[in-house]
Length: 140
Length: 140
DNA sequence: GTCACATTGTTTGACATCAAATGATCGTGT
DNA sequence: ACACGATCATTTGATGTCAAACAATGTGAC
Image (cartoon, rainbow over all chains, first blue to last red):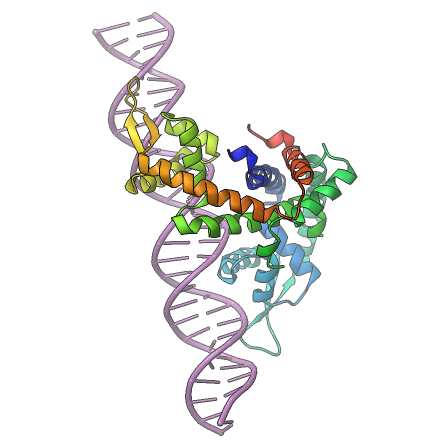
């Protein structure tokens, strides 16, 4: 029965794609999750942890040890927000930005590798179909 | 950059589909993982834990507490294998089979709900595309 | 202004997962 | 017959995740 379920194929695809993603970024000692955090911070410098958590679709408590790790490696900085002493403004360090550039190139290679069996049209169609799944449950 | 990555859309779809799946099966106190185990055991009665782990794509050590739970609820039975005293033959109990039937109906509703925005042809095409992703990394 | 309530980051606990180590058992080679 | 490596289930440890509770801070009602 499982192969008849779309969710089953989505899960298998997700596992395969993530396995390649993880293996590719492993050289930089980055997980897919950490990479995603760096991308979001780069595009939105100064954002708060709660905003980053929402953008990355993780609980804010999950973010804490992840940011601890990125901060310990001096890739990200938690700056006291000027207007709200409860929250931190997140920015990439110079090192973080540099590492992210290399990571992005690796991710591009990964992207071509996993989707190599699909044409550009097919990839676009796949994404459109994926985005139409479970519309009721999507929080974006 | 993230929206350009197919893996990103796969992940979002996976999260949305699983959220609905989980919510639907919650009535029976079943997780997607446990449901999958029941389906595989029903289709392959007597199979060994290591075979079930391979079929469900989880580590065999992950299986142990899951089967403990199913056995505690008397949905599955670990029977001593006749030919090999190291391994167990897994079978559904009467209760397990009954619960699985109800779960399957719930999952059918879930399937229609999440894929309701796609025609039958589109669903088939989506599955074909998903199955072509990351061919190098697929273990099946 | 004060006080109740909300929000932000963090800590803690529960859980699923994988990897590695362990003990029992199997199979094979000699 | 026996010894040794392989296999099966399990235990243990590490990690990532969410949810709930907490302290500090902000906000709004009065």
